[in-house]
Length: 201
Ligand SMILES: Cc1cc2nc3c(=O)[nH]c(=O)nc-3n(C[C@H](O)[C@H](O)[C@H](O)COP(=O)(O)OP(=O)(O)OC[C@H]3O[C@@H](n4cnc5c(N)ncnc54)[C@H](O)[C@@H]3O)c2cc1C
Image (cartoon, rainbow, N blue to C red; front, side):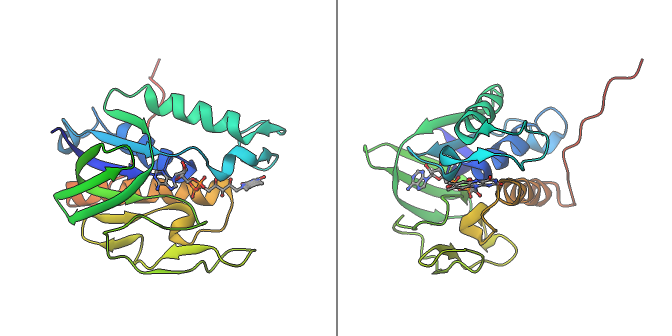
């Protein structure tokens, strides 16, 4: 079975931005050579319901579902990322050796795991995570995971609303970018960001 360098559960702004940032590092640094990423996402993201007027750089009146589709296409353009639609019911393991189980019986293996499943509930069994009340939600009964600087434990990261971010696109997406940089920095053994500049001349 193919083993992914990072499996990201959740394909909303947080999960997709994690994937985009990781994928865009390939070809820039020797330590990401050959790394492969998997995003598993379900039917619904909160962004599907939104009409956007305050996402920087995005035209006022853009539908959230259209923005989500375009980010998905942006991610798909990278050959080192695979996107799979499915419902994760169970995950287990530790850094270097996680297994993720889908409702349809498919199993994936990964070295690192990022959880970005939003704040409505967390019902993935097997990870021994602490689910607590969301501390930035305008509504009751929303959840987040206990973490330390986006890390639940070695190899297990949390991003977006599930990490307690306020329910705004930029916050969720920024959290995904941070987690990706954290993972890249672990691999590099020093602080890493992924920047591009225009060609000269
Ligand atoms: C009605 C509405 C209007 C909004 N308007 C705005 C706005 O104007 N401006 C703004 O900035 N923000 C707005 N938002 C907030 C914005 O949509 C959220 O902040 C953002 O979507 C959160 O991103 P996320 O990736 O953390 O979670 P989500 O977008 O909820 O994504 C969670 C992902 O995890 C997947 N998932 C969950 N469980 C599983 C599982 N077991 N297996 C596999 N996949 C799973 C889901 O399918 C989804 O892909 C709005 C939200 C709503 C609901």
